[in-house]
Length: 133
Image (cartoon, rainbow, N blue to C red; front, side, top):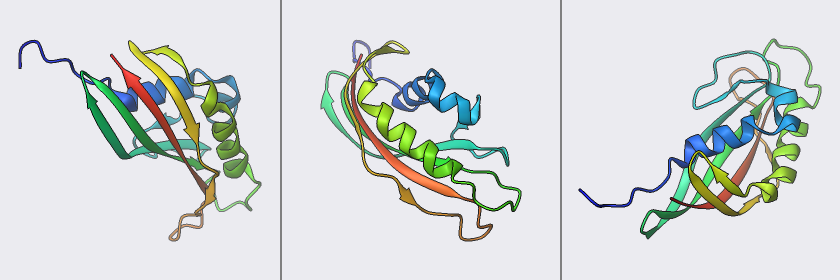
């Protein structure tokens, strides 16, 4: 495997980018990760799909789950506003993040998908971007 060019860790790129956006951290502080660990507003993300163009270049789509408060309180719209914020900011995801060059980011319109077991508010937005080493 010597000499192979590895694709960037796009999950870490997404986490660091989301954590660098004050409009996102105003909702979640540092509660952004692969697991949902808090009843407070949080973001959980998961890879949906991706294309490998070779030479370390990829285009990926990540599902960004925006979670509202999980204390059985009435839905105050936090999850939806957070997802709309991620959608609005996605086109600004460009430049170098965690050593990866990012360009061409876009997001779809959020989908409301409250947790069917707990009823906790959740909106999902998919973010697609290209990354090269």
